[in-house]
Image (cartoon, rainbow, N blue to C red; front, side, top):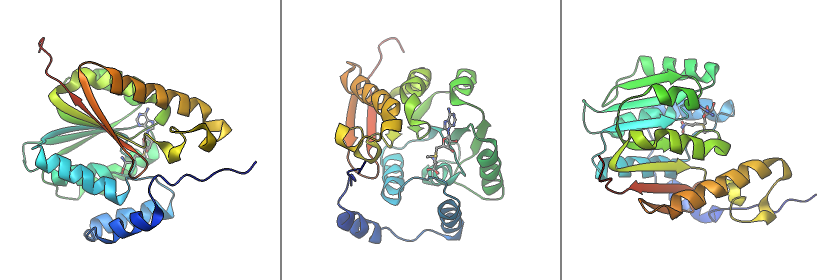
Length: 224
Ligand SMILES: C[S@@+](CC[C@H](N)C(=O)[O-])C[C@H]1O[C@@H](n2cnc3c(N)ncnc32)[C@H](O)[C@@H]1O
């Protein structure tokens, strides 16, 4: 079976945009090289800068992340927060990558503290009582709706949820891109996108860059 390759962004444009992103310091460069050499998926460069701009421009101080991997996005989120009293809490289910992230983060200074949690976010989230300005979902694509439901009450009024990889190589947009073994993930992600775009109390924008990024704004809840 021949597969139709989807490019969410025209590769020429993507390469040009990436060429404009300043090089990061050695800490980030080394994580980037490690991720590439070991096949660890980390945020794409333009998604990384997008997170930084959102955090800084919206004065975000407390962030919950689902999917730490080796701590690349966790680190840049902590560095983007302009408040030493801010905090990043990040959850990772894979013990090996959790340990790598811990090791990477341990001897590094960030703008605010990072708290790593080991375990399946679907279990760990129920043990977190804090409220957050932003939640970054970047973990198993088939479970975004579960993650969203479990962390919704941890999101402050006027807070945002950023969900990465929501167009998943174009497969979410059209069946012609779908690989058979990804059918369940595709179905679940479509349900997730339909949900976050149709709720009265949410305003969601889906942006076709990187692997697709959704930003969901939580409107004022009168009960809070
Ligand atoms: C795309 S990577 C995260 C990349 C990271 N956010 C970055 O940009 O540097 C996804 C990670 O989510 C983790 N993960 C998948 N399902 C999870 C779950 N149910 N709970 C916690 N972590 C999970 C995977 O083990 C993997 O390390």
